[in-house]
Image (tube, rainbow, N blue to C red; front, side, top):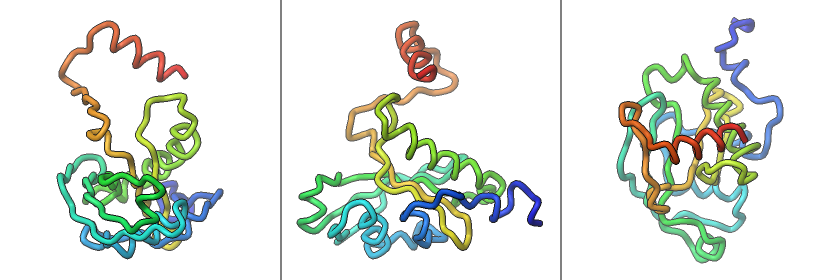
Length: 169
């Protein structure tokens, strides 16, 4: 239905950037060097992904897959990292929360790039114009030696204060 807020049409952005003109793979297995080359070339012209291997996969509200990448000289010249994470809606329930992926893409584009918050760098974030599926290529925070919290583990006061200050920004 066209009036359904969760429909594909509703998930499509109205402020399309070049990244939003690219077809998004339907499955993790379709994330090939060729597709990654096309995706990264939007912001990093001349870059070619020569090889991609998948590492850790995390299933949750979305599917996150660590990628191990090899580039041509242009990719190295542009200082692209050897690892990135794909985040996309490859879970059985993903269509029900499709708009959340679009909103996350807009967050990384609008806020994440400002440096106002400590967020992973977005190398690519696009929404397929035909399907409404969104995919993000994000910085690998493991390469920064980041630590990750857990919902059942309490934070110390200083960490909680820093997190709240960042959210307020």
